Image (cartoon, rainbow, N blue to C red):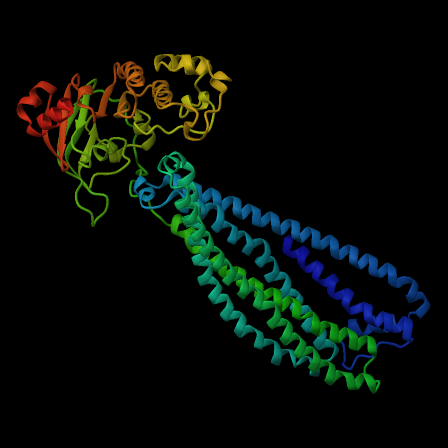
Length: 578
């Protein structure tokens, strides 16, 4: 529909240009149109009819014809611009949704290798180049090509011999425009990468503002941002310089062509072989070619920039998750017996070293199992295999004898609650954060979960209670309050399996005591796997698994491990002697 409106607007534009000069010639010079060429019959009849109109009558009709022609042209211009922009906005909407959907379905390892700011730049900034290509470049590609054809055809119909100069001079424009376009594509790729750097730094320094302030590195960050921003500016100016070069080169070639036309066709006008109005029409058609060619040069430039963005967008769209749900995945029944690791090896990619080596153990329903070991020994990786954030490189993880690769993500992760030491909260209300993932929870259920997590009292004291917005990442809450909100969220979810990553390790003594009481409430009647950094918190565990360099070197209750596991005894002595 947009293209149809565009073509209609183009026809009226050529009609205006084609009819105005000859009519003015008839009205004021009392001369009929003289065209140095045999026109098609329908045009010959039309010219004859116009020539036979009385100049005084034509004088009265001309303003009406002009106004009506402009009104129709502008109507079609409005319609094609509106419809084409609607197309471009729909395209942008759909690309952003596809990118976001893709990112939501990619595995965790994809995000560990890329910066958040870079991914946001793909969705927000790179898509903008596609928008320019669709809303402006695509519009001009059709419109200006159509106008170019109309003007050339009109010029050929009026004076075919003189019009041949168009096919000699104007192709000279193509070569420099092509070179500029190729260079713009390379510059645009660098520009988009630099924009991703800026986005990443902005995200890091805004989210890490406390660290920046604490270490007094404001000037360092400002200088780093200035350097990145200046590099982005230089790339932008390289692009601007090449875009700006398109206009003068097309204008200059157009001027050469126009001057040539004037010299060759001016003489027949002087000799009366061609009427002045027809000469003005022909000359106007030739000079009107400059604008479409100039805009087609910009189309090429915008298209090259969009192609560069397109590559970055498809880097995301064509990425495949490393952890995939099978099409025939079954629904995992509620756990009744045990979680088992059977000779599990794991590494993050083919070239990396093994993080876990021949890990083999069982967790029975209702047990509290603690995972301990030095930093970097694979504790978090091991626990991440249970909700299938990663798949083992070798071996298998099962629940009640069912391989986790055979079950759906929803049925698996719906049975698992996670509370980590780095609690993530959304910039939303307390109610929305507690109810996250439990969309059908009532206000009463949310408050009940908060009471069990010892969060109800401090929430009630907030300005708007459960309707209080807690700020970005829970900025307005203390560490202990954040943890209790996270625990309330897990209680509301009511999962049979609970994964804890030492949720009290970063809290002060008073907050730790409250949060530990909340955790005790949460753990009641559940199967719990806890990563423990403080050994004092795992004495009551039914079983403690000791990891060293990815291998299990001890597995028993606390007292027995003190007797049989040298590493555990060493870790215990270091902490308690300290």
